[in-house]
Length: 297
Ligand code: SAM
Image (cartoon, rainbow, N blue to C red; front, side):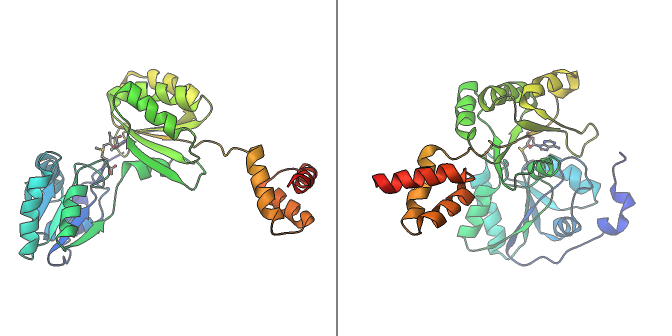
């Protein structure tokens, strides 16, 4: 794929947005392909007084690509507290400031939340400028039907802690979304297989939007072999999207609780019909159980 570059889009490179006074704009930037930035984001980066960046060298490359000569200051994990003071001073003076991370959406497994919290606490406006995010991109390409997903981000790096976390996530009926470093992805997949079983499907999304992008769906039982099939799969950035636990059929205790609650409000026949609808249980079985509950209760 040929990347789109700034000189292909002269009108985009020249775009300048109106920015509000004393506002922090939280601006999403590309996760690989530099063309994945919104027109509004480019306009805001061009118009603000200062861009607060996780790594000024990384952001300078993006800004240079679009011919933007903004003033940059560093706001990263280790100086977020201190750098917040500089940003608050700028905002207090009425300036507009943009916050960006190295890639994707700030504050999503990236620095930014502390700065945003302090800006809010000081009473200044905060506006998101949405765009690329690796988790959402991966989920959108999974084809998994659950309407709910749980974004977990990075699992603990140590094996024991990772397995403990996965044991807690295993019963949840939601698609699970993980970020993983390339040197840990094989170990992570092995733990996913051990704790979530072989059968669930997983999307392995590697190097999204980049030259060597790959997205592959298989079962957890097949994932280790897919990773091992090519040496370059040990490198690059990964998102893992795993299907949630299948909904369990209600146990006997749940059936009894449902029937008891319905019998307290409705005649027997209606209670059984409704219980069958709610639980998907067999109507005759439920009728027999309802009679027993009435008799014993
Ligand atoms: N803030 C970013 C976002 O909005 O997605 C995430 C930053 S986090 C520090 C970096 C992790 O995101 C990587 O280790 C990887 O799991 C995931 N990631 C980022 N870019 C990616 C890409 N192009 N392809 C696959 N995963 C990516």
